[in-house]
Length: 289
Ligand SMILES: *[C@@H]1O[C@H](CO)[C@@H](O)[C@H](O)[C@H]1NC(C)=O
Image (cartoon, rainbow, N blue to C red; front, side):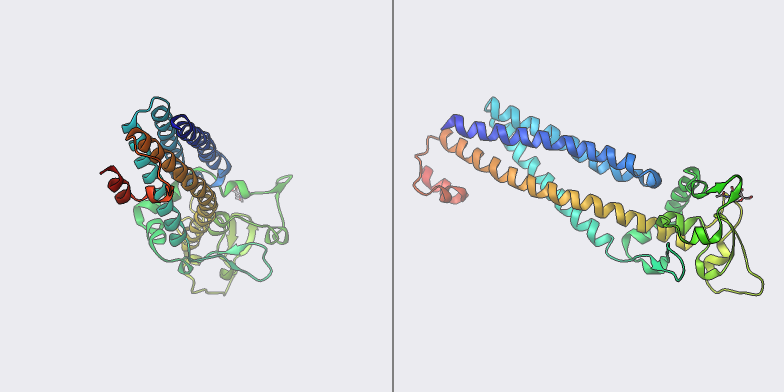
């Protein structure tokens, strides 16, 4: 009996341990995959931290189960509970914060245009904050994201018609070209001249600069592009987190059951006829007297 529940605990912890490896790998993959969201590197850290934390916890639970150290097991169950609660809040937070906003389709263009006014809430305030935006935009500049969209054949830039057919990423669309409604004339991907006689109200049109270090980095559309890109990656991470949460809850319940079983044997409690009643702490207490 004693052996069996310890084996279950050991197995649960071993599975948890195995689980922490893909989480760590996921964090590293996320940073490698999201080449053009380099500036949102901070995204990977919660992942790697969580993976490491789960790894440590599972080793703790494993040692606790093997050597029957009950305070380690208590700590394990408590830490596991914290991880599950944190994960749950992270998922809710990620969905709440990215619930609003999307790119707008434009006539005769394959890419979407982005408008800051389509976004709202905490994440928008964060990204638009002066200090934060200075950091993000200088990082985008250094990452040469806009230089990378250039496609030329023998020194001649691609034609406007080809450019209009491209599927640009939100950041490329928001930061590297003026909004379509400015009706600027395409010269190359990152050089656009104002058309004569057309005045536009959209203030992003005035912020556009052909200076290759300025472009639309100060535009609202660039912030909106960053928000759209964050939304995409947070959604991806959240889907993975939901899977993780389900597995962790199952493991936690299994671990909890094994732990209770262990304790009952330690306390020399008689085997109850109805094991379910043992799950209620007050009942467990009553059976002691
Ligand atoms: C567009 O032309 C400008 C000026 O000739 C050049 O500096 C820039 O690198 C070109 N942009 C791209 C994306 O090729």
